[in-house]
Length: 332
Image (cartoon, rainbow, N blue to C red; front, side, top):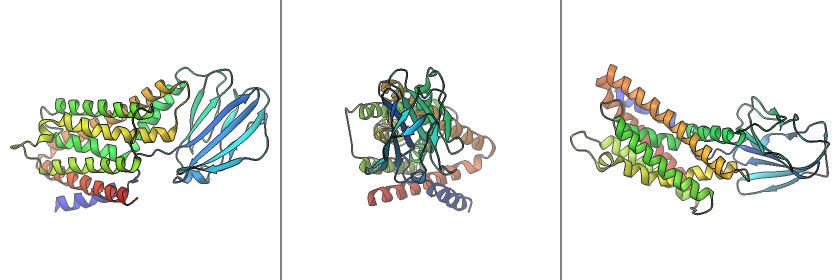
């Protein structure tokens, strides 16, 4: 009875999560100075996000619009381009977007003057307007992309379920399990870092939908392994978890790369943005591993009788959710 109720609860919670877990899809607002005092403004609004209904860019009083805004559509976004003539630079000016509500995703604001450093800021529904600092802060791009990386892994539910299933498979919370988990997570990290870098830099490429479907299959595989796991007869995934984590990590890296492609990389700071985005992903991943391991440790310490049932039910819930994602991604 306990298992049935827990399974139903976890399944409902997990299936309520967004199925397009790899797509951060923030809004993207870029101010680029093309001639002294002349700025081209690109507003990119993802089509499958509520942010598509946002208003117009917030314009400093020192700026005036030249001509009409130009609009075009890509497969995934609406692009609107403005041209403004601004007296003086934009340092100290208020920039942002109108018409955001609490359900909108973040906006990545980038300002590139003809002379001076690129500045990158994040806008949210709670803070839709930001004042551009008089002087570019050191590490501005690094911090912004680190935060974006953390946000992606913590909101990327398919990656989270893979990591949680890995923790469950290796029986976190029991004596001696931390080292196998550390090796497996390290292998996963190395693998997805390789494909993330390779794809972002244009060395390798795979179509998005097959990658998303196979990522769902990787979660199904681990969920099955969790449910079928027996201490007396370790399965291959338990004997060599680092190998399983590495192979599937290569696929997950393509998913991370797709999300990073949606955000965009700052010209001239690609290595820094790529590195710090990946570090942000790893920081978020370690938080998840620590939280899941601590929870399982508490269960083994205070409710050992419920541990096996909870682990099995969690495996079923993760597997059912991943099957739902797989069917949805195959169906398109």
